Length: 405
Image (cartoon, rainbow, N blue to C red; front, side, top):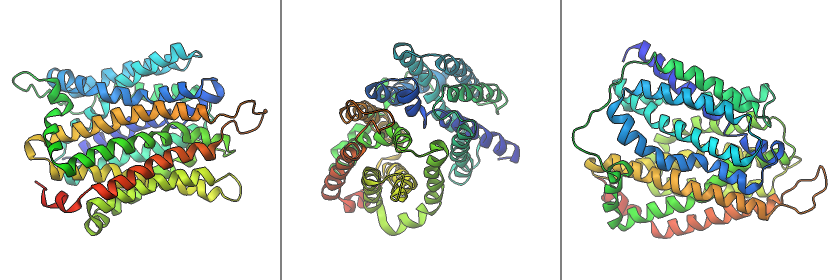
């Protein structure tokens, strides 16, 4: 891979995740405080990406990956997405806001897989080259949060305009990327191929079935963090929430770098259990922390994101890769993504809105915190803790290792 191509792909990842990071983290405070939407509506809004994640594999597998050059598909989706984001910024009624958001996420979510596939097509050694390219996405997410803070748009519809501008720049930039022709695979393609349903055969293995069930169940409380944390920190009185939440992505980079060494010493089960424990601990810290003497608990909960994400999601991807036969390895990864990032997180988004609404304090005076956050955060803490116990008892690491393909 030439240095020029590396720079091109790195910039692609930078812009790809800047667009998402510019609006996703702070959408909650904007919806609930500025736009005046309800907690259930906020939950539905955060479920839009999960809903799109369930649908986008059909687009990638049946259309984009077969008939059109990848760089042109990326350009089209990001340019259309830019228009939708700008349109979204002017909506004040949820009945108009939500369908436009759904339309946008249906444009954006397929680009995650397409950007990865384009990069893999042009790197010489994916295992060696891709991590250094992909890390630019995490860095740009951090920069996006800092940018929104610097512009004072944490509770303003202007965040969508920033994302729209970046999306338009990215759309034009994609036209300059190395040509990546469609795969033009012979024969028809079935829905089961796109969703990775051939991997269902792996569920006959009790250990793998426990892994899938645990991953699905823990994905539900996981989404409480993405949907509610920015709103929680804002109501707690923390300022510059957007930039402070990027500490989670900074820790993600650090833990990702040390993960190979930790993985070799702890193994799959302990890594997954540590990830689940981190999610439980994070919610407990949020439940009892405050923006006063116990503010360290809030910062610790944010910084735990590196362990929460890397030790659970990345370890899970490694486990699937070791368990699935080579012929269905891609199908297995697609199936797990559908179950966790799609179905599990969609349920979690919707449920987070209902739970937040149930712990809203009726008749709260002006200036008072409108939610009982202590009780609220203990709900996902209990859910994640329950899955942790189930997984600790039912998951057999010996079978997971000896059964590796």
